Amino acid sequence: MAFKIFQLISFIFLIFILLAPSGHAKRNTPSGKKSSPFDFIKKLKGCHKGNNTKEIHELKVYLEKFGYLRYSNKTQATNDDFDDVLESSIKTYQENYHIKPSGVMDDETISRMTTPRCGVPDIVNGTNYMQPRNRNHESGSSGIHAVSHYSFFEGEPKWPPSKSHLTYRFLPNVPAFAMDPVARAFQKWQSSTHFTFARAQTNQNSDLVIGFYRGDHGDIDPFDARDGTLAHAFAPTNGSFHYNADMRWSVGAVAGAIDLETVALHEIGHLLGLHHSSVEAAIMYSELGGGQIKNLHADDIEGIKFLYNR
Ligand code: ZN
Ligand code: ZN
Image (cartoon, rainbow, N blue to C red; front, side, top):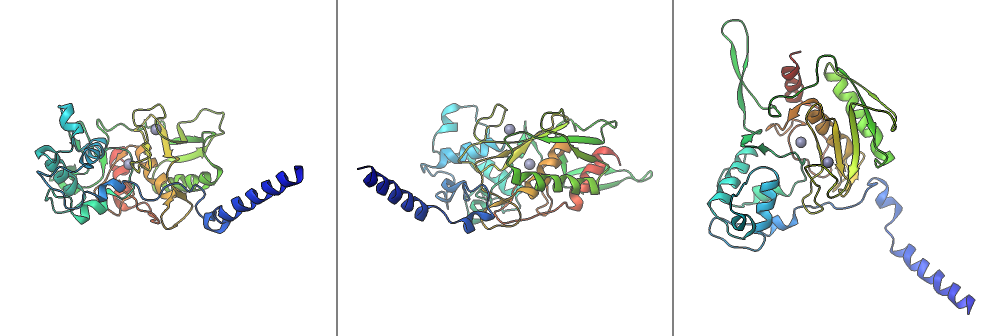
């Protein structure tokens, strides 16, 4: 009898081994979770004002999360009516992402919305951070008015002049494979700005703190397993930078997975005071596709220099 049970367990174990994903496939994607967020959006292809499709209320949640939509009426916010307010918020989204502002859920809009993105909203309290604003780059008495694409948080919070050296630490929930990519991202910011960074031990105090979380994790912006939010970070001098543990992460370019270092470059930009940029090549652009790698861009460096007057 004992032998039969042993045989049965061995058989189950063998089946398990055969069905488990192969080591090769997993090597480059240490955290294999999901790769195609926002799938419900694809079902809204061609939708426009006047339509009533059952995924529309989820589109409203998406647009509300990233700052595009705010209904005062709860019923309007949760029903499936494609109304005027929704159409106008889609037009604003399209303008921000350089798509013809038709208000229709066309292919380009769907492709943009289904790309994973940073959790920091593009619009906060009516301020659209992705609209270029005229800044006065002073040059003698004439003054040059240049249109810039980088942006800052409301009130332009920044680190005080005494804090150009910042320490960072990893919380115990950060997987070991994520630490080197984050350290490389700090190194890149250090090479291009007046800031220097050093890693502190997990049990020490530090200016910046990096963690991995899923779902609601105690701050104002819960990660949603469905919404494909990559990460978020807070304005100076908060110092918190959180990765979404439910995303599929990679070290380097791996199809369908998100590069840890590229996301760290973006979120460190928030920690230093940058908001989103409308320049697609800038690291502060809000979206990042699977397998994509990006670096700091002149727009990002100019933004930090302008903010800190360097
Ligand atoms: Zn962001
Ligand atoms: Zn968080």
